[in-house]
Length: 50
Image (cartoon, rainbow, N blue to C red; front, top):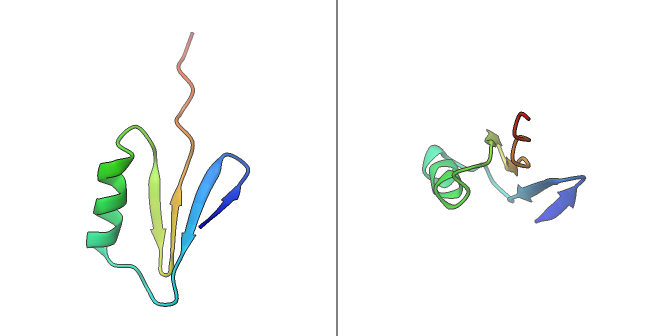
C-alpha cells in the first residue's frame, strides 16, 4: 500500500477481483474506488460545492 498525492494505492502480486473491489468500496463509502488488474485505488473524497 502506498500513497500518491491524496490517493491510496494497493498493489497485489496477482489480480484483484470484483469481491476485493466491493470489500474496499464498503470500507470507504464516500470515496471513489477503482480497480485496474492488480491495483486498487482509493481516491480522495470529492470536495463539497459551496
